[in-house]
Image (cartoon, rainbow, N blue to C red; front, side, top):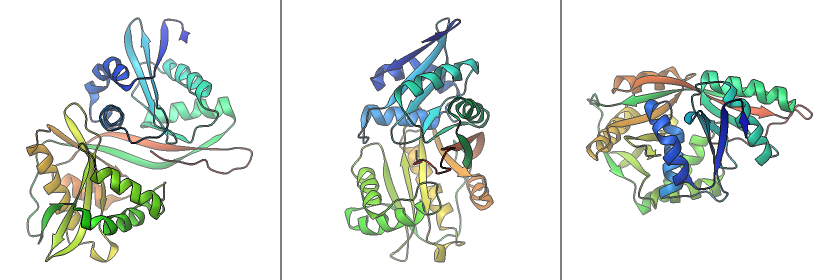
Length: 298
């Protein structure tokens, strides 16, 4: 497809997409860490059952936008150099999918695409989560929190499944026990993602995960502490220890996303060295006729 000097190219192979899109995306690695991480996951350890959507928009041979989707989840859009690229992406996505649950991207880009989608489809939209992408290069150690971090073991599986279910209840995408079990198993049987647990006096008190490697970094998440154990610094200590371990393993950066409606999380992560880099919105599209929400996810 083309519009004036712009051209959209869709890829079936994640490696080919990466070869074309990576130089553009890595210029703002923190802002694009989700797309970069999903791309590396598709190449190295693909857990998705449906083929992905992979596209770049170029102007005179230079990439000006990139988009990626792992159905049934949201469309991920990069920062764009020219908003006209969003029109090409929208029309191509509509040619591939009869419906789209939502979009994730830099705040202004996500809203600009959503306005176009609404005008084109007659749907409405709402912000599910207003997020902030953080980047860490050096850990500020957490002092005075008892316990230690350990990698999750097979005997921790049942606990982790329960924690994944509980964590999901405060996200836009709640999961049942079966789905949580699949998510835990994928994490625990992968070379590029995993889970750790913070233990205090032989009691598991908090967990953190890591996933989505990028050329120079990797993303932390989810992070969960049971409600009755919060306020004791366990999550801070767990994330700090995991972040240091990932840096020691050769990563230059560690990324994470926070919900801007949670001031506690935004404070504790900055306290251990995470620096805010970009605002990213997760937007859900709604059917105008019924008012019902489509399935949402990432």
